[in-house]
Length: 148
Picture (cartoon, rainbow, N blue to C red):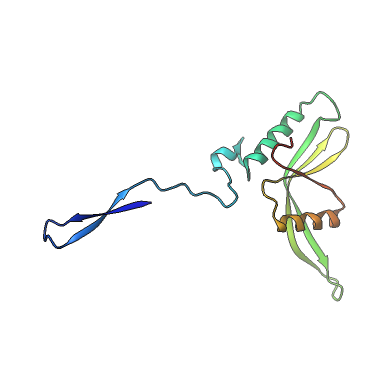
């Protein structure tokens, strides 16, 4: 952002020139209020949000949990789920969309949890979530701020 001022010209008194006085440009704010990359980086991995990064830290703590029920054995990040349908006439499969899950967590007792960390719930997300749950027969756990 700059402020313009008029300055008289020494060559001819009728002429003036506009100069820009430098002010700091305002920081760009993302559409969903996402923090800068620096604040979303953990162990060299840049996460989509600080909330997602914090959830990853929590899962790492659960890997050292005392109770078998709470102990995490493996963590998979950014798990893709391609959503395909079969054409009735030709029998070919067509990719409709791809859903990327934040975390697939496996616990020591054998449970598998599918987790999506959400700050803003969009209509497209809701539709894709329903589609994946129907196609793959899984239940996606939605984690929001303050829920863990």
